[in-house]
Structures are given as structure tokens and as C-alpha cells.
Length: 209
Image (cartoon, rainbow, N blue to C red; front, side, top):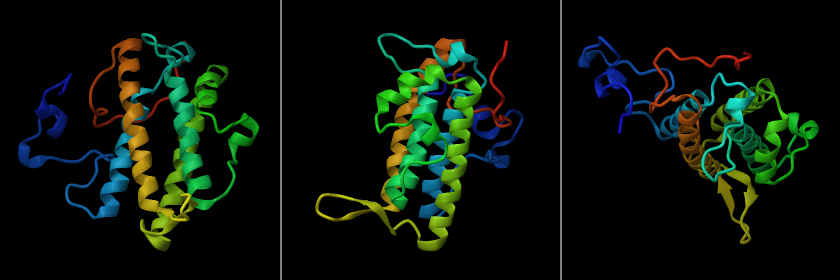
């Protein structure tokens, strides 16, 4: 259900005829390849998530609703860690590195949520933005080198290795869950709703006032 704006405006853009539909840059292709659709679906969810957490101060990022302990800041840190864990540890077989060595990362989802309050908004946005940039570069290189069917480092108890396609689908699922969480929390923070970002949206800096 579209909760804000008409279907026509969401899909075609205000003032555009139905024959003039133009995809925003984060929209998956209309009729692309398997690779294009999977990567496009992942990037659309990444963009929607980033829009839902965008431009907040520390109080906004630490807002909780109901009995849940999940915060937007915790989601930023959790998904940033997931990006690096999936492409470095699961796919490449390398240890968590980069900012996580200094940040004190542990393979514990509760730590990411509980420790986010100790990070500034700038730190949290930078963690996520930089992790996604690394993931996009790694995935593009991997697809060019061996495609989605290539085996990842991680294996099951029977010795079978997951494919890169499986890892990408896992990350899509992870973002699907948590973008839904972010949708509800952001509405509680300042009333922001909507399925997709506005067509001309770009990430902004956190609020300082």
C-alpha cells in the first residue's frame, strides 16, 4: 500500500505521462539479467534503508518503539558489519578488518545494537556508507571474475560451499527484514513514511542542531 503520494506520482513522477516513465537510479531493471536483477534488488533495499535512517541526530538514531530494543543507529552498525562479514569472511575467507578491528567488533549481533549508542551519527553513517562501497566493489569484481555461481569460502558441515548467489540472496533477505524495522522506527521519530525515496533524494549529513 502506498501511504504517501499517489501511485501515479510514485511510479511516473509528478507531471509525467504514463509513456514517459523513467527509473530512478536505484530502481532494478525492468527486464534485465539474473545478475542485474539480484544486484538491483539489493541496491534498491540499501537505498531505501539509507533513506529511512538519513539525516538524524544522536537522539533520532537512538529512538526505540514499544518493547523493542532496536534503534536506527543499531541497524546502521549491524548492517555495516553484515556487509563486511558476508563479503570478507563468508565469501573471501578473510578476517573482519578495516574499521572493525579498532571498533571492537565481535561476532555477536547484540553487540552491534547495544554499542551503537557509543558512536556519533557521523561515525555510524560512515561505517555503513564505507562498508557498502567496499561490498559493491567486491561484488562487481567477483561477478566479472567468476559470476554468481562461483563457490564462496563458507561451507556447510557436509563440505558443500555456498555460492555467491546464495550470499547475495541472504543479504537481500537481511535488508528486507531490517528495512521494515527502519520504516516503523523512522515514522515514530519524525513521521517520515513512503515506500521509496523521492526521485531526487541523495543522502545528507546528520543533523547537528
